[in-house]
Amino acid sequence: MVAVAQAVLFRRMRAVMLRPHDKGLIATTLNFDYEVRSAKEAFKEIPDIKIEADMPDLARHIIGMKKGTSSAEECDDRYEPHSPS
Image (cartoon, rainbow, N blue to C red; front, side, top):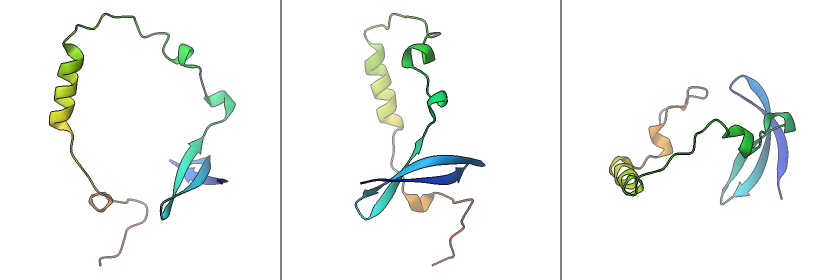
């Protein structure tokens, strides 16, 4: 079961779908039909290129070296400051 609601995101009224997840809710922004483009149209200007065989392995290595973890406590909420605990 889901709910559809409206929320202001980035100074713009957006339709969102709310659905339960564990002990909370997940909000997914919804788009109007005129805001959605086909993948064919969205990617038509990207040229076809040949990727060298070792490039995917190199990309995986770089991502593995750079990835990390984060938590919500590390993020600063500019819109709703939390009082100190």
